[in-house]
Length: 594
Image (cartoon, rainbow, N blue to C red; front, side):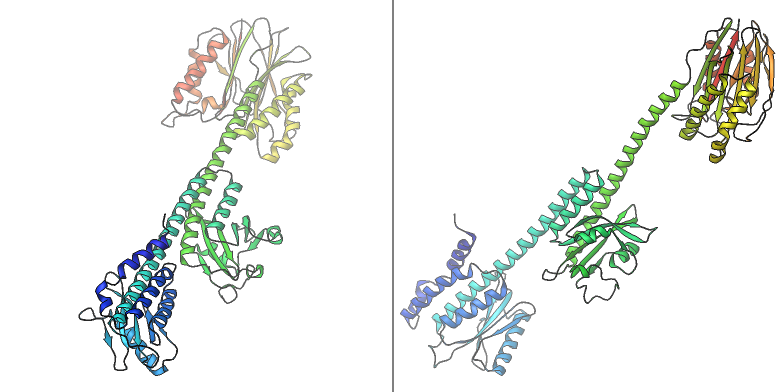
C-alpha cells in the first residue's frame, strides 16, 4: 500500500507532467530532459513538506538549481512574507519583493496572462490554489552571464514547479486543519470520557486525584493542584496534586491574599499568566519559586458558589498556556464541579442511610428497654404503649418490683425529641430502677432520681417530667408522686377524675421535694397514666386533642381488659391526628383492678 507521501507526490507529478509537444518547442532538448528528471526528483521532496516556509525554501532552492543562475524572490501568506535570494541588490530586492507582496495581498490579477514582467526584468508568477486564489508568488530574473535565458520550456518548468509548491502548500494547510480538528476531536472525546468516568466515582479523594492526572495528560501539565478554600483561616487547602515536590505537599495550605489562586477564588474568574517572572498582577510568587513559568488557574463552582480552584503550571522550555488551554481547563473544572456535587450528594445520601440504619437500631434498643411483660400481681391487669414522634424519642415507661415487694410504675417525658432525649430517657429509666429498688415510696424515688440527674440536665438545659406510682398488693394501697407531669386519671367505677399532684420537673431544682398522695383501690378501679403527646396531638386544621376530649373519651371507655382500653384510647388519638406525623412522643399506661 502506498504511503500518503508517495500518493501525494505521484498526484502532483501527474498534474504537472508537460505534454509531449512542449518538448519540441524547448530550445535545448537535452537540457529539458535533464530539468524534467530534476523535477521528478523534486516531487518526492515536496511530498514530505508541511510547513509553508519549508515549502518556500525548497521552491527557492529548486528554482536556483533548475534554472541555473537565475535570481529569485518568493513570497507567501497573509500578510505576505518576503524571501529574497542572495546576490540581488537590496534596493531591487525590496522593490520587487514589495510589488510581489502587493500582488499576492490584492489577490493577483486573474485576467490575461499571469506572467507579469517588471521594468527591471523580473518575471512575476503566482502560486495559486485550485480555487484560483493566490497563495504566494515568485519573482525570477535571469542572469544571462550565468545561464541560458528563460525560454518557453523553462517557463513551463517554472509553472510546473509552482504548481507543485501550490499543491504542497494546500496539503500542508489541509494537514494542519486535520491536526487541529483531530486535536479538537481528541479533546472532546477525552472530555466525554472524563465526564463519564467522573459520574461513576463517588469517593472524593479518588475523584480529585484521578481528575488531576487526566488534566496533566490532556494539557501537558508539569505541576498542578486542586485547592479548596478554608475561609476561617483565609487559606486554600491542597486536596489533590501532581508534580509538586514533597515540601509543597507537606505545607498543605496556601494564602488567599496576593496570589493568583486567591484572586480566582474571590472573583470567580479564570487567570492565565504566560510568564510568572514578568507578570506584576500578583505579589506572591510561590509557584514561580517552584520553577513554574506559565500558570493557568480556573475556579471550581458548585451551585453558583466558588468552593476552590484548579491551578496548573508549566516550566520554562514548555510552551506557555493559551486561550484554548484555558477553555479546556474551564470545561474540565465544570465537570469536576458537577462530579463534586454528585459525589457530595452521594456521600450525604450514604450518611443519611447510615444514620437511618443507626436510628433504626437505636429505636429497637430503646423499645427493648420498655417492658412488654409485667410482674404478675393478683387482681391487677396492665397494658402500656409508647410511640416516638421520630425514630427515637424521650417518652418512657417502666414497671418493676422493689425489694420490699411493692410494684412501681413510672412514666416520664424528656424535653425535646430525637437522640438527645432518647439518651436521657435511657439514663432516667436505669436510675428509677436503681433508686426504686429500696425506696420507701414514690416521692423518695423522684427525690433521689432528681438529685442524680439534675447536674447533667441543667448542663444540657433539659428537663424530665415524671409520674411515679407505687402499689402495695398486701393492703391495696396506691401511692402517687408527680414531677411536673400531666395528672393521671383515676376511676373508682364510674367516670374519671384527675389526681392533682404538685411537683417540679426533674432537673429544675437539685433538692426539690415531692409530695405523695395515697389511694385505696379495689375491684373496678382504673388508673390511666399518659404523656402530654396525647392531649397535644393536633389534627389537619391545627386543633388540639385537648384535656376535655380526653376526659370525654375515657368516660366512654367500657370496663374491660387493660389492653383493649389502651388500644381504644390510642386509636382515637391516631384517628384524630389523621395522615400527618405525630407531633410529639405519645405514651399511655392503663391499670385495672379486678
